[in-house]
Amino acid sequence: MRAILVVLLSTLLLSGCVSDESKGLCPSAAILVPTSALTVFRENGPQDPSGELYSVWMTNANTSCDFDKKQHSTLSEVRLMLAAKRAPTGEDASYRVPYFVTVTHGGNRILTKKLYFANVHFPAGESVVNFEETVAGVDIKFDRNAKVGEYQILAGFQLTHSQLEYNTQNNKYAP
Image 1 (cartoon, rainbow, N blue to C red):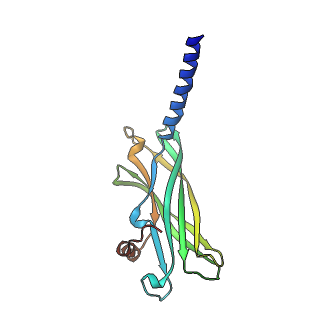
Image 2 (cartoon, one colour; image 1 turned 45 degrees about the vertical axis):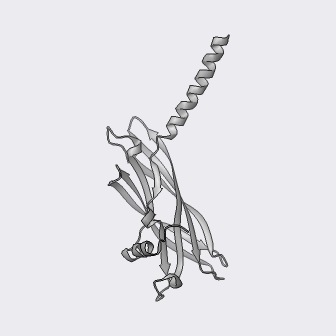
Image 3 (tube, rainbow, N blue to C red; image 1 turned 90 degrees about the horizontal axis):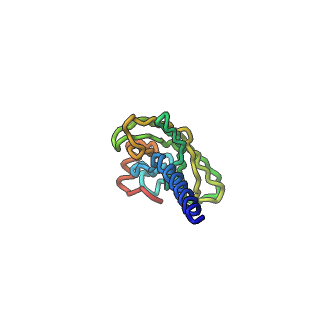
């Protein structure tokens, strides 16, 4: 009886390990720091903090996936958390901001890059909003001898050269 109990407990413990390992089969997701913020200026306004219309930041990225061992691939979903702020105003305002999701291999080889648009909505009287964007269908086919950990999903805002310079000069990387 004691031996049967030990076998049952061992089986339960080992089955828990299998499910924990499956969680590690998704590529990681991260935000590319230099492109983590987007600042938009008022038309004809100064290109400094006094001329800002609004700013939006990517604050976190998570991924989940279905791993297909036979096809040596994953189909991932990326969830991005964003925050935006503007000067206080009594008006409703909505904006569309471009962002990208890219898949890299080995930290230096870009496999895919797709452009998306997030809708930023400020209700009347609100100066700060938090929202999420979900990108489904990020398909990654692994090289035959590659490991899942060699692949990463990166996200950031699609910036112009001057927007990237503004981020760098003003340390615009976090809210």
